[in-house]
Amino acid sequence: MSDRPDHAAPGAPAAADWLALREGADAEARAVDLVEELRAGHPAPGRILDLGAGTGSMARWLAPKLGGPQHWVLADRDAALLGHVADTLPNVARDGSPVTAETRELDVTTLTAGDLAGVGLVTASALLDVLTAAEIDAIAAACVGAGCAALLTLSVVGSVRIDPGEPRDVAMATAFDAHQQRTVDGRALLGPHAAALAEEAFARHGAVVRSRASPWHLGLDDVDLVQAWLHGWVAAAVAQDPDLARHADAYLERRLEAAEQGRLRVTVGHLDLLALP
Image (cartoon, rainbow, N blue to C red):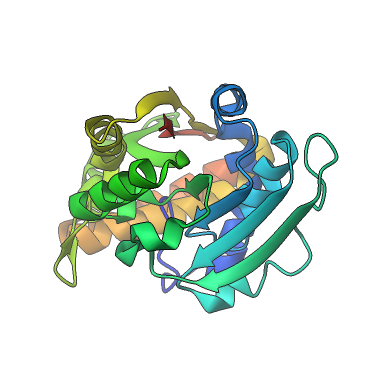
């Protein structure tokens, strides 16, 4: 998932802890008006497939905003994360209809139309930027072919603003964006270009596409999240550009101290996308 710290880096939380840290900020950032458009154009999706579900934060946020009976299939290739879902999901929809759920181990990079049999809505959060162009195109083709709506939220767009600024912010941001576009096991990740390419892919396959900005606005109330994000952001930048290492520790220490003292504000740009068949 995007914005994710390197969990091997000193100070970085474990994956489940990171998802818990960011859940509130994600909920604040997601574009609620796209949910309103989803309800208008696709009022009762029924069976919902959540790709890269993690610990289920998308279902916790979205299920109470949709009407009609819902059955969520929370899909992730990380069984350990799915193990944290437990009984934390809502069981009542917006109109009082029942909400049920199951978990499924699934590698979203191998998604096919067969995985969407009976599915009315596909969702994802902070996922697209760790996919390739071919994988996003396959998801778009499968959704449109199956008549599924898609609500894909919180894709990073390569926009980070830290206030007050420092001269090294630009170098860190540039290296981080390059790290998100690295090639992993032969897969060329899209990073901040993913959201735009997803819009194009869904439109090319015939969907009606809407998008909205969904930035994180982090400050004094988000100190733990800001500090975890800083650890991961700097670690990824240094991994991409080792020349940054000689300044990274001092830079990170200054930024962590400013966050602790409530003097740091961070805005991380994201985009939410709604595609209706």
